[in-house]
Image 1 (cartoon, one colour):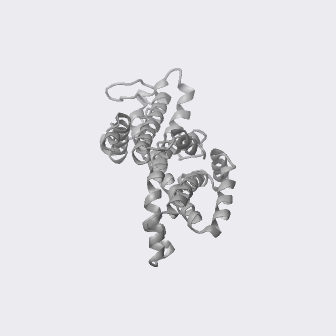
Image 2 (cartoon, rainbow, N blue to C red):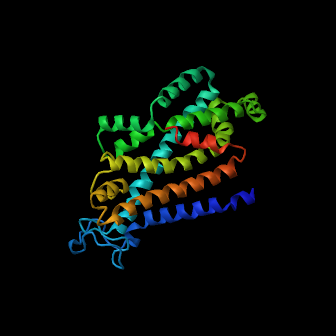
Image 3 (spheres, one colour):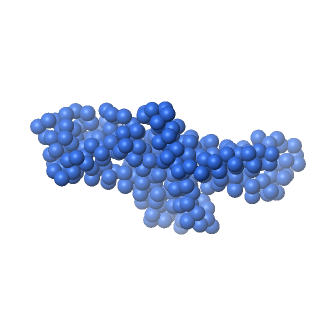
Length: 281
């Protein structure tokens, strides 16, 4: 177990995630400029000592906007993943323990699996309108079924264990058993796919921002920066490339951390199965 915690990939993922969180929390202190301040004399200027990643077409510091863009991207990704994980895990363990609810809850889960996640998100945003709240709802809706499936699968095997039977025999109620006996056995798998899922949510948030349906200006957001930089990519490629690099680095960090956690918490699992679950929604 100690050797698994020393995995180079997992350690690198932890370091990268810690750096991302640090920059997101202390963005006002580490950003070289106000992300909305326009320096018109430096429009489309390349990287320099004053502007480490250059300036965009309005003269705004790209590095500052990338750093501040961590807040909506990372904050929303973690919040959406936590919301989807809570809903899915709760429904999954309820379906496994209460047999009368199993068929109904799993058929509802199958209905959500039938729609591609991004299509369901686009439909939800078209109804609710763009914005952070609608973005959270739109991405949490197609995100919870994979947690329900994993939680139900683990809970079904735990439900027949001897300590669960012993708890039931001494008079423990269903909610006590779910909380103290079944949930602790389900959480390692849920935490693993949650960490992997954060990277996927960052991609979805950036994709919807690219389409103009995500976080709305003037809040800095990587997908919006990417689309705004495309018209000037021939003369100022640093604008779009910086946003793409930030998205790629964030996804890489959480993917490496998630795969490391998978090896530590559930070493017998199949990596291909985790990847299928990661991209199912």
